[in-house]
Amino acid sequence: MNARDIILRLKQTTYKSIVATNIKLELRELPYTRRREIIVDLEQEKVKSDNSDIEDVIDDIIDEFNPNK
Image (cartoon, rainbow, N blue to C red; front, top):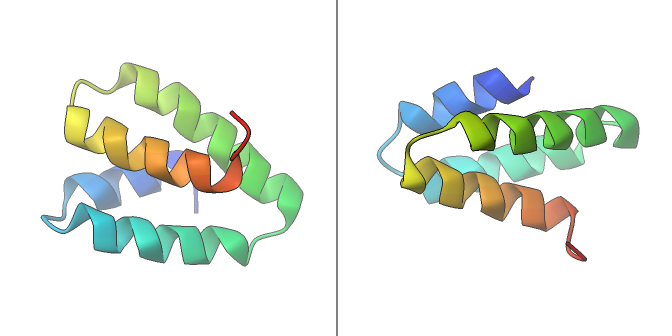
């Protein structure tokens, strides 16, 4: 799993919130360091995105693992 795969999965679905929930579950199963790398990559990819729906879902995923941000 990497940030680009996550973005592609989100772009290919109509039900972004359901896919985001599945992604969160998958991320929780990863070791902390790997999960942290993916979250940082997602933050960078979000800046590149021109789709507000994707940005909102990415924010939701990031906030799940960075609640103090």
